[in-house]
Image (cartoon, helix red, strand yellow):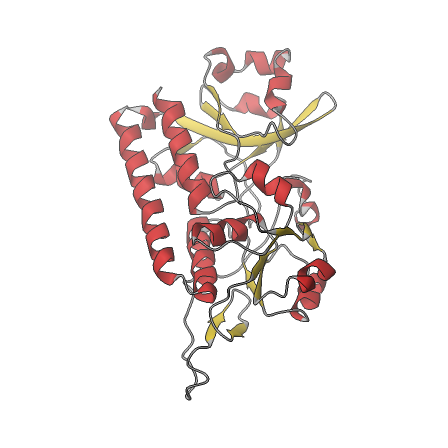
Length: 327
C-alpha cells in the first residue's frame, strides 16, 4: 500500500510520518583503475559512503522502492525486479511500468529468493530498507543505497538519486536531460501561476486515510517534496506544523484543519487503493464549516501522482497544481 504503511515505525510522532536522512550531494564518478580489463568497470559511491563497483553499466537492476523504480524508468531503464508492482501502478502513473518486471514482494520486505532468481547486476535500495535486509541483498548482488528523503533538501535528494542510478546504468546524459526538463517544468508552472494571479493565495497539500468514521490527515510541510515544489512555484505553504526530519510530514485530524483559513486545499488519493478519504467527510459538520470547503477551494489532484517520487511525479504535480489553481 502507500508509504504510510511502509515504514510507520520510523517516526515516533505518529503512524503517519516517516524518517530517513543522509547526503544530498551530487553523485561522484570514481576513476577507473589502470588496465584494459578495468576500464569498462563502473564505480560509484552511494549515500551510505559505500563504493559500489560493477563490471559495466548495469543492465539488470532490481529496485526495492517506488522512487528508485521511477528514477530508473525516467532514465529509460526498466528494472527486472520491482517491489509491489500493483501498488506502483496505482500510485505512480507518471513513469509507467510496462511488462517485463517481476514483483519481488513488499516494499521493505523483498523476497530474497525472488531477487536472487533474477540474477541482477545491481540492486537499488533506499535508506528505508532495514539494515538486515540490505545485508542479505549484498549476498546476492552489489547494492546501491540511496537516501529516501532529506527534509529541506528533497529536490537535491531527487537529483542525487537520479545521478546515482544513472551512473550505475550508464545513462548520465539522460539524467541531465531529465533534471533540466523538471526544472523547466517548475519554471513554466511558476510563470503560469503568476500570470493568472494564482500565486497570491496560500496552499495546503495533504493526504489522508479513513479508519471507520475517523479521517487522519497528513500535512506536507515546506520540508516535504511537494512542499518544496510549492515554494519553487511561488506559493505559500499554509501548514504551521513541524514535519519529520526526513519527509517533512506532520499529522492532524479534521479538527486540526480549523487552523487553516481560506486556503487552496490540495490532496491526492487513489481509487485503486483506499479511495478518497476526504469524500467521507461530506456530512461532517466540522469539515463543512471550513472556509475552503464553503468556497469550493478543495482540489483533488489526479490519481497516480506519487507524493514521494522524482522528476516525473514532480512534473505531473506541477501540471495538476497549475490546472487546479488557474481554472
